[in-house]
Length: 342
Image (cartoon, rainbow, N blue to C red; front, top):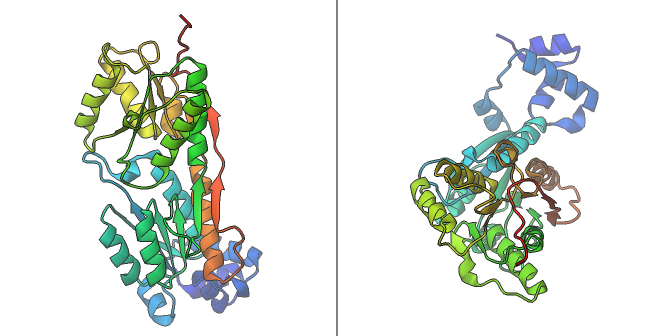
C-alpha cells in the first residue's frame, strides 16, 4: 500500500510537499511539482483518509453540488447528456484543485435550503435553483457560493452565476423556423412555474414572432409530463394529422431526440410531417436521424467556469463579472423542412 513517504520518495520531494498537494495548499508548491506529485498519486492509486483530512483542518476539502430538477419518473437527471456534461466538467475542475465533490439532486426547495446550511463545505454550487430560494440561501449562509443557470428575483445581493443567453437562443431558433415558413409552433419544456431558462427561451420565441408582426400565444408553451409514457401520448397528439402545429420546439435536446425516435417508430416522418428542433447541442442531437437542428451551448465550459469562479471566491481573489452569460449559436441540420409558399 502506498504512503505519503513513498510518493515523496518517487517524486523527489519532501512528505510535507506531498501533503500540501493532497490538502490543496498549492501556494506552497510550484505548478510543475504539483503536476508531478499528482501524477504519482494517480499512478499509486493513493486514497487519502478524508476523515483525517477534515479533522486536521478547519476546511473539509469538499465542494457541494446541488442540482434542482423536476423529477422524471423513468430516468435520473444524469441520464441527460447536458446534465452529465456539466457535472463531469465540474468534477474534473474540482479534483484538479485538490477538492472532492458531494452531489445531491432534488426538487424540494426546503431541502435545498436545509442542505446548504447543514453541510460542512468549502464551497457550494447550486444548479437551476428558483430565484426565491437563491435569495434566501444567499442571505443565510457564509459558504462561498456559485449558481449555474439561475434567475434572480431581487437586486439586493451579488449573485455569482454562470448562465446562458437563453432568450437569445429562443429568438434565434424561432427566427429560423419563421424563415422556413413555420408560423404554427409549439414550445415544449418543463413547467413554466419553475423560473429559469425555459421561460426565458419562450420569451425569445415570442420576440421573434413580434419582430415579424405576428404573435405567439402563451398557450403555445406546453409543459412536458414527468413520465415518458405520458410524454409519448403528447407527442402523438401534437404530430397527428389533425394537429395545427408544423414544428415542435423543444427546450432540450433530450426531449427532442425522445420525440423523434418515438414518432418515427409510429410511422410519423420527421421532418416531412412535422419539424423538430432542440436546445443544447448535446451528443443526442448528432447521433439521431435526422440530425437535430438545435441551439448550441458549451455545457462543459459552463461547469468549468463555475468552479473557476468558486475557487476565486474561496481564495478571496477578485472575480470580475459576477453574472456571466455564455453565448449561443444556431446549428442548422436536417430536422426542419421548408414549407412552400402557397
